Image: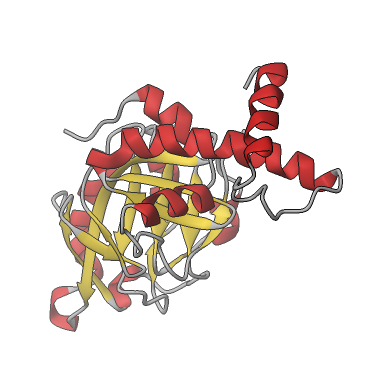
Length: 241
């Protein structure tokens, strides 16, 4: 079953992918950012997209296996995945970084949105991209793509380990997206990464305020000057952070 702790979700919704990337780097994880994707639609409340991964895997299409009639099969992995992806999850699609044919279109993304899925990510492209951009569901892709997925992709499996934009994605991993892109947090690290990222964000907000007011970064970021740690503790108390 794919789910996540709602307290952890709330924490991650308030931090950036950049901060998460630094926290993961400290643990030796350098390949968690999904490469080559850009936001088509961000969450309407201005916070980060966060949810456990539900995956769809494509392989290169073979013409004799992919006529339009395959969509009549209710067990077709793409259509089945759209109906089974749990509310609160992010559907992540492995399209082999090939945006010459669509990974999905407006109707299927609408269905995901109505079912409560919070985001959809592909390293390929979406058709009906203008419609998807206006929906209340976060979405990321490489670029718009009009041809049906059957042109080049065969949906072969759902909820299995995949690669998306060169990042490994296992079902249940936590997917976070913001204006910088999408990053994947291993499920067993999500809580500790969330806690650390929240703390990092508080300090970074303090540093931003100091720098805007003319402070130099040396000794402040990172805080190698002890006086800056004292000042940070005072700022945090005064600001209720």
